[in-house]
Image (cartoon, rainbow, N blue to C red; front, side):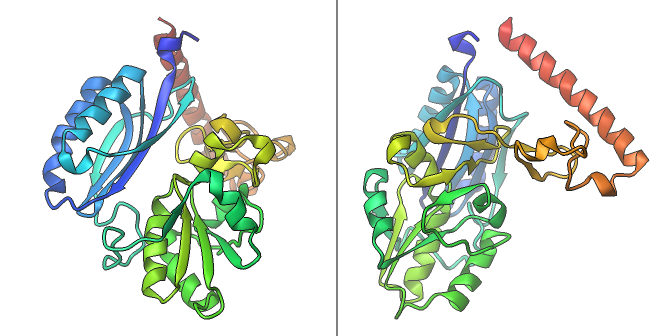
Length: 305
């Protein structure tokens, strides 16, 4: 593939007061579309959150556009690369929260836990006095997590406060280390835990993605792959594309072992949905898969032209 056709994937967020967030939507959407950038950006009164992809020049242009707002002048992002576009369109959405905890009174702009760099993270989570908690959802944890990490077994981030209230005690769990994919969920999780009386709350700066980018595999305490919310599905050390796929029929994560099942048919079914697949649904799925392959082929031809 030509270097100029490599897609840059940029994950960004910032908690900052944006009372005029609704007014920013249309200009931002138009600018992204003009640059050929695709992905999703969320805007709310509490800040901005998103993942976008495009050419090197296009991503740099959008970041410069965002930073023209003085409130976003120091906007940081995490970058990775892929050979195929991970998004089909560009969306800018207005939300109540840029990451939904369901407690609008929790404001990371007011208080947040202690940031820990990827280089310092190993020492922290190896401390036996530290409780290590994965703040992500159960299906994300199942394909990869840090050694010693506890799985709250939540189906959505909204369930995290109840997990804290029922399973953690600030008088017993005096040091807590939180982590998530890119860092944004931990901002809110740590802010919430501080309101609940937890004295020492730490979180991984830049999240798992920054850790996998900067910490060599031979020194890593990460086990498995990291789920990402785009067509790559998962990444591993060095942010290389992982081995998991999503079943296009039911949305279940599919491992290499799952593909060995006689119930797995690429684009049509997997072991988790095969038994419930009617003849009519199979026919619809086959048509969707043909359409998907046609779109992928057309996109590849455009990239190579």
